[in-house]
Length: 270
Image (cartoon, rainbow, N blue to C red; front, side, top):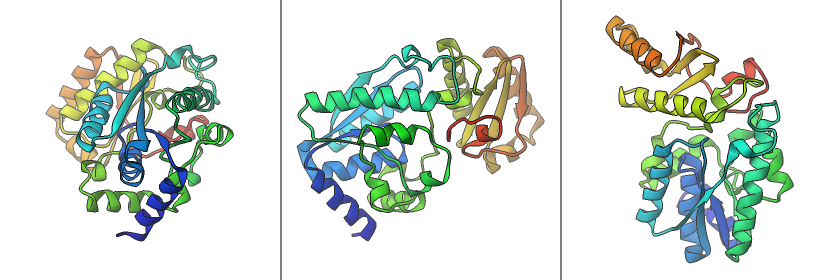
């Protein structure tokens, strides 16, 4: 057994019982899998259902829990109703995380679970993540971080365990697609989600649609940028995105990178 995974199992066993904040991403999937192994029925996955989360991510999370025999709870949260969040201030992520994890903590208490855990890892310490302050304030545990696991190790362990998410592209809250100070609306979030879903169906894996009003700024990985050398494909994408309601479509020559909004504002990793 991988030594890092063994440390993770020991940490989870010591918790006694846990509600795992489960998004279906690489990190939280490994955490949920380990919690199930370490604690059995004393581990519950809690997935937040909100307009900040694409429907396809909710479906993937539910499918995983069914396959693993892990109890799964969907927690409905109206994120745009959280005071201050819709205005998209610099502290938006903190406000949102504080409200969401407060509700997850309350749900865990109702279920008789001792702890709430989330999927931050060692690499997250190197980026601006205001939401981590809310996590610390609420006493939420970060077992992957506590076990000293970084993203590469998490992917390697996930692959060894046969988890399909081991090479899943990074995903983040849809609110990270908006420039700080630009109000976030339900229609805007739906437009970003639909646009990214369409691009995924065209074969693009790691991507972001950053919204700047009526302008869509596409961030693609190296393979995706190479594909756009095809004028016909570029024209197809341009036409489709105009159909989604954008007036201008631009390609970011810097490509996909986490935290790119940090160069524009104080937005969190996404």
